[in-house]
Length: 220
View (cartoon, one colour):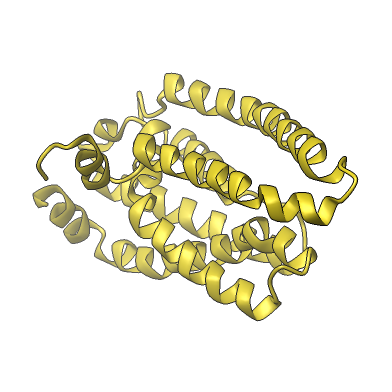
């Protein structure tokens, strides 16, 4: 807390601008990511646009509150060595402010014009770029950056494999049968249970600490 107050005192105007900049990035990222979450449901006619927007807003807000701090910590400390800026808190504040504004503006413009964009790629690349331009010795965490790049390269391949497996499963259990409608109604609980299990497993491994402790039977 004392370190945060020192940063605010050193560059109060930049710290104050960080709040609207973060709000801009949150708005742009939410508007962009909600299409990934509900686009297929709306396209299939399972949800109306109004229902998708309401459910998406609720889910995005819950996800940001529960999982967001862990993602923010990884982004903030996984790409650069924060301790390298201990002697220049003003530089660190300006670094983060520049990254927020750059990622927020680029994501919002890309979303408005329908261009493919990733806010995560934008904020990470922005942090790395401004850290290089700052000239701070030892600022970059090369191991963390390498791990991030590896994840960026592996995630599309993992998504491809998972999508192919799910598509094959649905085809064999539903679409490839003589009566797809009856098969869908019969096997819907199985597919929903599979999705719920995967979501629960993700929360158990990467979710909030209080949830993991409660599931593990440890006191809060």
